Length: 399
Image 1 (tube, rainbow, N blue to C red):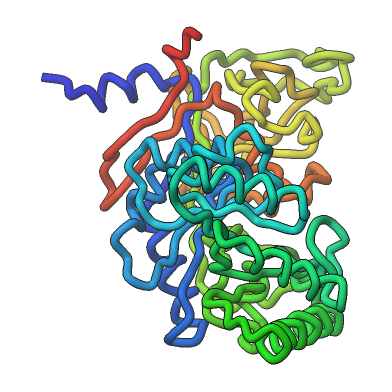
Image 2: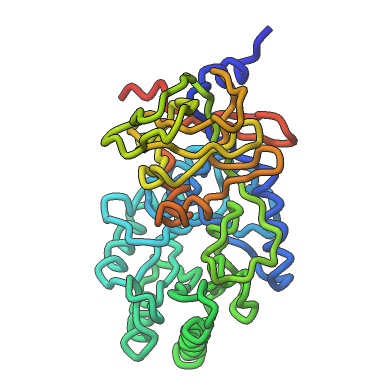
């Protein structure tokens, strides 16, 4: 009898992303080993866990003692986690809009604060909700995005927050702009500004903020002096590198693989053109296979004529332009290739592998971007101990 998971996988023949939950855990352990024993980790699972699946990842980490909680980008992302029975603290890293304040406080979701109007509106919402709003103060030490400045004006803001009894300052944080560069001068300067500001808050306002954090993934890898008592694990959680400049000494394991199947194989004659614009013209008789995946699935069109896939553990170069829903590859040198053969677009097949970093280099894009852009048209299959334990798709998203 076919299980429900097997039935699901049978419907995923066109394309699917495999999410290795064991790799998530391995990466988390390696990061924990690289920080101070007392430092906890905040798992950044915004954008649905960088396209990997935020809810299954949060559920897996929920009972880990060194996990402080999770970071999201929006209230909606945080709310989804709460609806999935995730209990640990959730911090919203960006701006939250007033419509959600009361519900956010009831759900004990922590907003980042750096605007006076936000503080006042949160205080009003806290009174209506009948409980305090736990907040993290955002400090801009050089990112130039959001946050208070680490100076007298910023100190006045912290004092302003303290004057609102409906708010509880649980944390304070900043964000490195250049920690993923080989030269750490900028990151160290930001760290100094942040630490000095925290010292002023304590000495001049008498406030000891419990949770302090500034390290992102690159900081976890290379800035032990920035551990504080919390670090934010983002891209490294998914086995991807923050940049090409960081030292790749930690044994990170990529979490996502992207797979498909060959749906058509044909032989073409010399001079035959392939795909839109005829940018590929066969130099001789060639065997071409069609893969039913395209930029509508988040597979970069910029890989046209540059990228490759793996079939039978060998590279098959892309011929012509990647279409919205299909692209073609040259399998002449790896025959026999048949319809139904598995294709690896990202991941490992035998001794060969294709990483998001490699695809980023070939397409002129960013590994973060590639992961986040794998669209909801691509179902996710979650793997643990070599077995598929859960799936996620939007095939019945009728509303």
